[in-house]
Length: 392
Image (cartoon, rainbow, N blue to C red; front, side, top):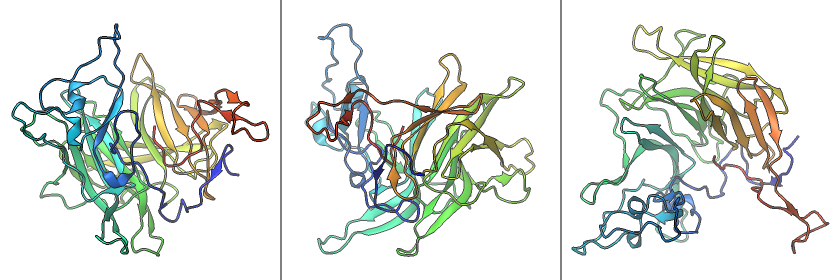
């Protein structure tokens, strides 16, 4: 059965890429406008609203040549980091130092962040569907899937390069995950160990018209060394770990921290895909059995109860963390699409202590007097419309 509160999306969601433009991380926009499509990759930031005791106490731009987000750290607006108009002129009148861009433009990859020793975070972007313009209106652009890794360097001063730069892996690197899109990645916190970014499955379109290959691999990026590796299955020693149930794409994965029966904290990755009906998949990483500096991966199928989401992909998820600890209280899932293309705006909450699903009623007030009202149904205010490929 398709999710309720749905609309129809005609492009195929499970065997091919949609032609619908996707919004890239930090896509361009300014003020009250919204991000544009991924072809503009990548150049803006959203900064939260100012908390001020006086309406006249708003932040004012400085006279230096630094970008607007460095001068107005609490302004609520999208700012275009690629536009010279974003920057104040320097005293010498020299042009601003614009951020580096990911080239060629792309969509469908995965962005992730990790914390650093300075209390900030590192921002990365991996893989996706790249596009090179043909140069002629009658010739379609060249499109191909990639597996390069990019890191965003924050602005420091106008004499230092900043923005996106491609990560160069160590010369000893002998493994890099293959090209893909519609993938999922989750970061396990370090807790005194190396921070691990775990890449799970995805879709490699390969030659156009073939349908490509849905992937089931598990790859790990050590963020400290920038080296990729393939963890070994703890259940099948000597074999690389794969996703239980087989290949998957258009899924979600996120880190959670829970306590076991003895009260010890455990960092896990929760994966939810179209196969998860009365269960979710949990992944733990371990190096304690390490004899050759290898990582071991262990999957657990955690049964659930309650009203769970129907089969779907291209949904989004986020964890809810306790305000008094770093323990995860639960996971929220929103939207997505069934295999037949029906999109949803349903919201579900999974309590990760009782492993119980609850479908949330997030509908706002129904305006029956709206001029677009049809059949007396009205429009629900304050609730996103059905969608797939969104983010939380």
